[in-house]
Image 1 (cartoon, helix red, strand yellow):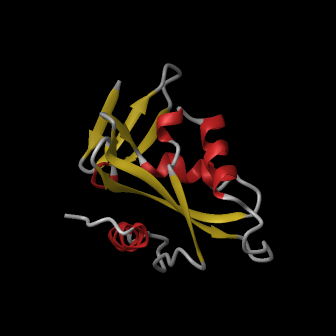
Image 2 (cartoon, rainbow, N blue to C red):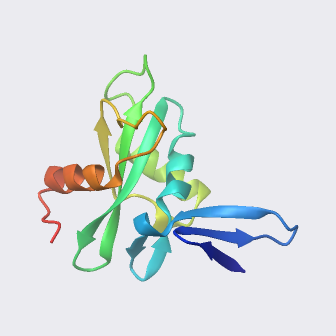
Length: 136
């Protein structure tokens, strides 16, 4: 059963625990499936050498939106030592394949606010520019 507190989505599991799915405002609709970026981000952060990740939806004619991961490597991890395919395959091994990013953009820093929040709009705009895709 799914529940919503304004802006947040969660499920109550059979054991009575609550599993937070994510914020509705950043939910990605790809091929008719809803993907909560936070779920994918947490899996990406388990890849050895990855420090942080943000997942955004970029417009796609066929799927509505496609999932793109923005990844910050851990200090001491050499640039180029982790390939996009490694990140994508790791997500597919942990989650349904439709939740896996189609591409990975490596950045120097995610740039979280002092409270730890991510500027999803900025990352979406920068990623769309990186791909050469208009947002409107």
